[in-house]
Amino acid sequence: MSGMKRNQYHFRPAALSLFFLFLLFSGKVWAQQDSLVMKNGDVIEGTIKSMDKGVVIIGTPYSKSDFTIKWSGVSEIYSKNVFLVNLTDGRKINGVVQSIQGGQKVMIVGANDQKMEVALNDIVYLKGLKSGFWSRVKASIDAGLSFSKANNLQQTTINSSIGYTADKWLLDFYYTMVQSSQENVETTKRIDAGVSYKYSLPKDWFLAASATFLANTEQALKLRSIGKAGAGNYLVHTNSSYWAVSGGLSFNNESFTNGTEGRNSLEAYAGSELNLFDIGDLSLYNSVYAYPSLTEADRWRLDFKIDLKYSLPLDFYIKAGLTFNYDNKPAVTGSETDYVLFFTVGWHL
Image (cartoon, rainbow, N blue to C red; front, side, top):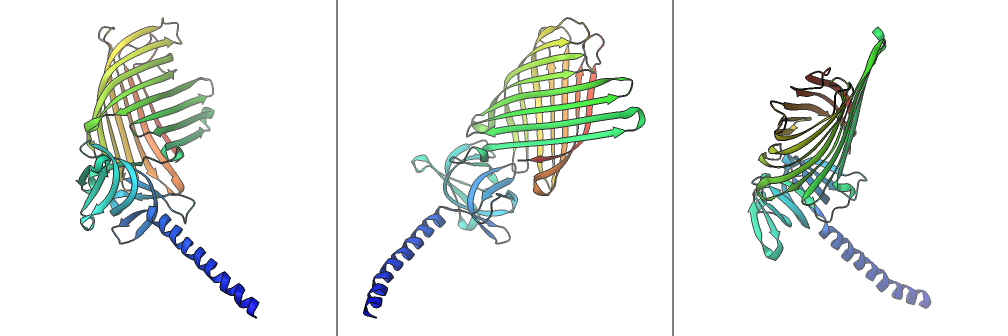
């Protein structure tokens, strides 16, 4: 019995040490967690990865999947981690974000104890500076397929995109293909692909560069390659929408399928992009760009696009849209205009 008592006596301090070590470690982990207080009083603990376009992404220890929450439903935020923060007035700051005054204001503490008080709705973008590669990646793919018994008409539509967001810049790739085949009619095909780069500047200004490629049988285009460089500004930048305008120079190189000699053109460009991403489960994107030629007399082109997307559970969505192109001096047998109407089902990351 005495030996058993000694064993119990020696075991208890070790057990207590492990217990207090567990409490200390748990408290440390808990302290490092971020907190979101919702307007309905719920509190979500975890790691805030990002907030963009009115949606905050937070990872929690009790779920393998991240939670996506509408920023409009958040009343307070608490974190000891450093974020890249963008504000509605275009200001950017790296700092720790904490709600103060019972949630009426948010204190952002940057380098050298620089402090800034803002309203929660003034924050339009958050990105954890230590966030991993995959949390900065976005991707989507959608497809549509239609058949008609008459003349064996078949149409295939594929839209895909992938992008990466860094602290000061973002890179996007996209690929779109539309193909129609019909009995006793030549197959028509349109392939549109490109890459774009955008670098953020103070006060919501940005630099932009892109390369796009278009092959289109309707306009007798074997390949149109366009390189663009310019600058722009967000006239509106909130948690529910943005409206950006931009302009610059464009170099256009074209080859044709009908024997027309290839041509090059230096163009100016001016454009507008509008994105409404908080209409319930709906989002709307619209862009229009005009390209007056600087080296071909009286030539100009126009690109117009509008997409309407409805979100479904499990990151699926349905999308409908229109793409329209106009060229007042096309290839000899080509058409001045071309448009694509599509309806697709897709999934996004």
